[in-house]
Amino acid sequence: MLTDLLEKMGFDLPQQEWEKPVVGVSACLTGQKVRYDGDHKHNAILVHQLGPLLRFRETCPEVAIGLPVPRPPIQVVQLDDQLRVRGVDQPQQDVTDALENVAATLQQPLSGFVLKARSPSCGYLSTPVHNPQGQQIGMASGAFARKLHELFPRIPLANEEDLEKPAFLQAFLLHVYCYHQWHHNDHQGQWLNHMQAQTEQLDEPLLSGMRQYLEKLGQAMH
Picture 1 (tube, rainbow, N blue to C red):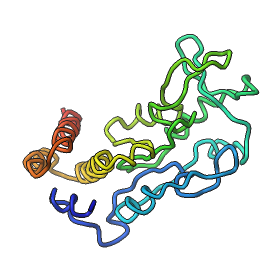
Picture 2 (picture 1 turned 90 degrees about the horizontal axis):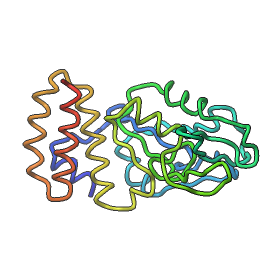
Picture 3 (picture 1 turned 180 degrees about the vertical axis):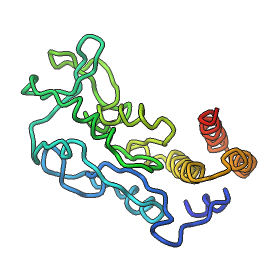
């Protein structure tokens, strides 16, 4: 149980909605019909397992920049040393800067983000990259996800498909709660020392992952 894991690490379970960490979510994952094909990608693990423990702030970057539903598909294209998001059938349509601006205007505080895998806007390290002729040549992040990681490098990010792995799901939730408490703590150094001691309650691979994440938060203080 995820609640047992949180209590094991010494986190108080939220009793009120406002006490829950706020996590950004690609809107299609909660059932909103905002995808390019007019459909959604409702994710049961996100909604039913993480939903009771987190507050979701839903966004669809493509809709946020004014693209319609449904809409012609877009894709990530490598042009020289740049990754651009352009229309598949209308390559003159470049929405890269607009998608990045959605990430830049997100209201804080967010304690994590669950993104739609392989999306040209939201995919995190999972989105196909094409050459100008349309052939896939690699993988990268979508424009929104890439900017999100650049601006907020310490918040945990996940593709929804990652949540299907129990160990990843547990680690993501722990990291979200860690970031939430660290970010709102007036004595961050003491809190980090306490949490490092608490990691002794964990088994691998959660133990190593938590220690690395806490070190990452500690580096932000220097």
